[in-house]
Length: 305
Image (cartoon, rainbow, N blue to C red; front, side, top):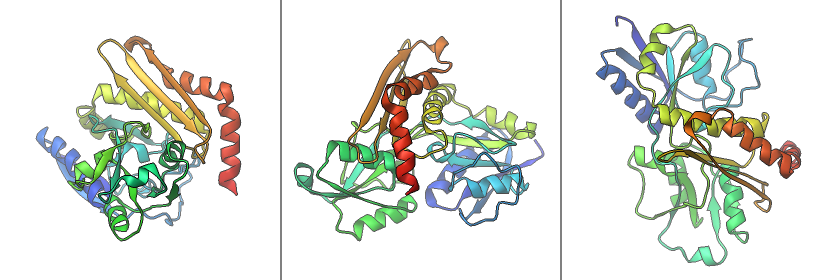
């Protein structure tokens, strides 16, 4: 165990919390580690021919390049931010046990707006579509930045509330008193899960990270991301998915919405543990064959405008 594993992470508070969590787990197993924090820049020149497949992950791109350039050995991500196609040479090495999967509404102490007109903030097409589906009279405005930035923007605004992933706020003790669980909102594929990626040819790191993998979370997130990949075809869309283990089976719920929330495709299915292969793909194909294909086409057209 002489090699020091260099852990790459973004420099936000949440990203650093996640990296330190992985660091502690590796240290407890006897591995030497160090953390390298990098700013997530969308403007780094991609001079790697390896970097193909139209990778869209703005949060993961900088760390992918650091790995491909040999600056770090592994990288820690919120799994929902990771594109379904990883760059050539990089592989998923561990999925940690999942935290809270719920979305929550952080509000300002008054929920009367839920019964009338209101303004909600989110940078997520999935949250926007589901909110407008339930509250068609509301206005949804864009909200970007890391968790801390978004919380501050909410406080400084005249919005009624903003939607966050519960897990992110809980991890860095930022969850306020004024919130409600949105248990009707289907989360993003892999929400609440952390993934660690390594280089395919790095046997040392892959072996170390395999010891951190949580099989149940790995299977559930695989099904959800397979559903996403089959529906998306390289396009961002309002897609939610959640797979959960029950005593004797895996339950799955997947949704595809139009951008304005007016059109909704839902699928709910269950499978036994030994037959989860292609479960997500099959669910996505069922939606595509029942109007989802046409909806995805119109979403692609709308997003290109």
